[in-house]
Image (cartoon, rainbow, N blue to C red):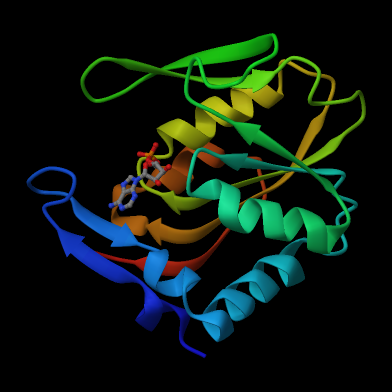
Length: 173
Ligand code: AMP
């Protein structure tokens, strides 16, 4: 099963110059979905993960499925104003301007072993902010996983000291 074949590249979406990696073509393929989920599961199964955190919104799909398979809980990290109960937030710098992510204040319990998941690693800014957010709690980031890594952007360099994995790599656009 070649998972990469099931990822669609859409040029100039959402704006010119971005080659968007569309995972909906993988998600609609039952065998592809299963194969990708199994690979993520194999990477994480013996780590004692208690919570999987998925990053809005494409990190929710495999994050949720992976949590169930690992017998762990699932926690969403969301854009501002989406979570209904009190939150803790982290602001991070983008190429132009700032962005913010939030997590429910009561989502993480002391001693939780966290797996952070998102669909794609580009510059790593989003995932680094997620790590910083989790580290405001008394919990440990055990593993970070992505389906896709745009390795030419060198986002991985932001994660020295973390266990980090991706299933599919793109070396260039
Ligand atoms: P970054 O913070 O630069 O690592 O960007 C990662 C976030 O932006 C992830 O949540 C991705 O879903 C999204 N993203 C960035 N670049 C792309 C791309 N080329 N295709 C699809 N999603 C992307």
